[in-house]
Image (tube, rainbow, N blue to C red; front, side, top):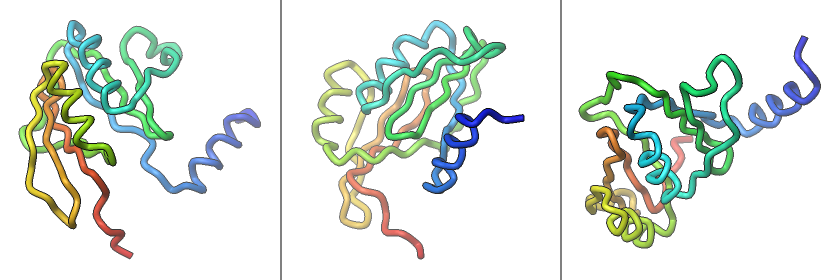
Length: 137
């Protein structure tokens, strides 16, 4: 039976109807640099994953959304697939990423919002958006 804490936490997420996490495979020797990349986007590392995942995955989180960094000797990296992150202070974030040596370039504006593309360690593409697109409904 689920604990009261688990039920309450699950209910809070369900009420927000949000995407909880995305998993990305990362070379083990690139974990630290990958954690640095996500920290520049405002994500912070959360406590270690529970057993049996401990030591095989790192989790970062921002505003309730997590990125799970799975340690993999042969990571799968999609050629065009990407993660998109809303970054209202996009110019500052782009400057921080570039100063830290990460690949980042401006993209054309869509829906009136500035955008940029970045590449995380290991090759994962990350779209930076000043604002999300308008809601479909």
